Amino acid sequence: MADAMGPAGAAGAVRFAGDGELLDVVQALGAVLRRVDGAVVAVTERIVARDQCERDGRFSTRAGCRDAAEVLRRTLFVDGATARRFVTAAGAVHREVDITSGGLLPGKFPGLAAALAEGFLSLGGFLACTGPLQKAVRIGVADRLAADAVLARFACGLPLDGSGYETDDTTAAVERAPLPTTDELAALAAHIVARLDPDGAEPSDRAGKRRRHFTIGKLRDGSVPVRGELLPEVAAQLQKLIDSLLNPKAGDEGSGPTVRFRPSDDASDRADGLEPHKAKAPPAEGADLRSHAQKRHDAFATALMVASASGGMPTLGGAAPTLVVSVTAEDFAHRTGRATVEGAGYDVPLGAADNAGCAGGIQRVLFDENGAIVAISTSARLFNATQRRAIVLRDRECLIPGCHIPADWCEIHHVEEHARGGPTHTSNGVPLCWHHHRTLDEGNWRIRMRNGLPEIRGPGWWDPYARWRSPHLDYQAVDDALDHTRNTAHAREPTWSTR
Image 1 (cartoon, rainbow, N blue to C red):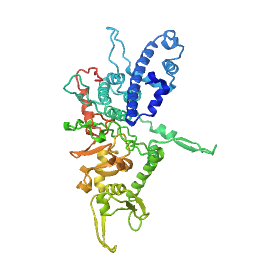
Image 2 (tube, rainbow, N blue to C red):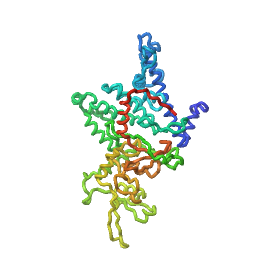
Image 3 (tube, one colour):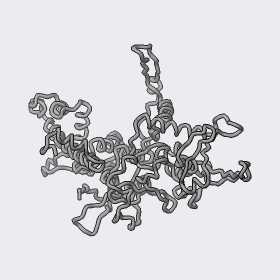
Image 4 (spheres, rainbow, N blue to C red):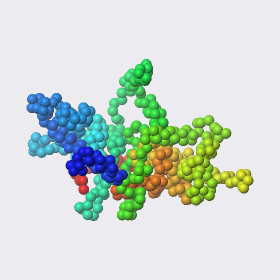
């Protein structure tokens, strides 16, 4: 497009592209960027290799630079930190030459290096995997290669056992799960390092206690500077307080749950005929197009929900402060009219009653023709504390991929609606954050329960195979794959294909 119309024409074409076209462009650019990252790392590795000699004979010296990082800064026009990241990655993919045969010896991370070279991994994803393994000096060569193989399969969207989603047609493409994000790769790498080196790094608690400080400066140009170093537990508590009013994220353990996107065994779920929610691109109103201010509002709504349900707030009228949304039975049944927020008298859509009923309890109050109460009944649709704890322990986070709001901040959603006979049971409840709970009916994400466990199916742009997938990384499967690879008698360099 740029060759035909020039940069200005290409920018104009993108400006007026539809949602599907724009999404195609972003995905294509992501694939190109990953390929470019792999190519730059390969070239950097050659530069670093040619610098392993006397200073006058070094490539960087002959180019008029101090080292490989400066060569990259001056040729790629990147900052020093980015240049050093490429140099670090080049060291991880480097392969020594066998002085006897002249051939190349296996590298430190053959599987991850292949995934980087073939465009499955970005520079950030590659370093997220290799960095922790290189820092764990007590992990041996065999264990490092086993970890490399498992991480490379995960990065390429292949099963951890190495089987692959092959088809009968040898010329057909391998079916892959949605590729993991850098955060998900980092979490899996942290889990593997913790398993291979359970003792971890040497503690530095006393040094941290000596350095701890917090100072508040004086007013200067309308602001007050602060600086300091916090102990880990203090920093974690501060982070939780900040997250509670912004966009809550999962804890910083590193080994927390991530999305594995393991496909369902039900072969009948192949997308031979795509349903509306599997469209090429999601509708604009279904995508997360919230501004930062809107996200802060939604986070604040979540904080209010958690505070009101905590039991630690003062009572109002002898009971915990409870939001009551009322709607007539006829309007609720026929999906007509509006709902009312009691007390404030606000007029709200029926969807507000739906969400209040899903996350809370329903109390039916019957009036006679004169407005007198003649009957009160309460349905058992509110998940009790024990059920909620079990669901939080199982799912850990909001079920929608990429949303890391902790499950204990979420509302519990009935997968099969209570009004249609869905039970208030752990096998029918999943955690959804305030925002995703209220946008689930727009159809971009589908949820079902299978054998007591949740599965998700996303839009076509996210998963072109439109399979039902487990939203959780099966750490037992990770450990089994790691053990199997470690116990293999003859480790071979894995071959990765872009088919």
